[in-house]
Image (cartoon, rainbow, N blue to C red):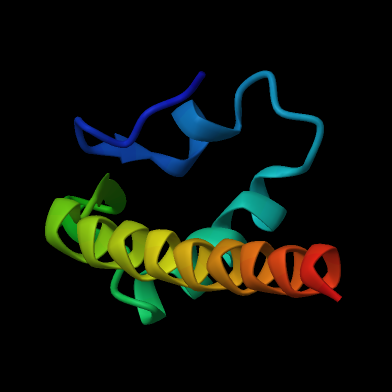
Length: 83
């Protein structure tokens, strides 16, 4: 599994992936715009790393969504079993 814990250039991240380097760059652009990763320049290269705070917030939001969905499903099953 690849990680963005340490800043990496696109070429390092694209190695071994079944998509092109330009495709990886486009995905990184979307993640950066969403605030999920950071970018810093090192000469002519751009280095990308995960934004732990933003990823933590995203994880919390997804977990809340699943809790709500599963709670609703459990309530529907209970209601069906009662009726």
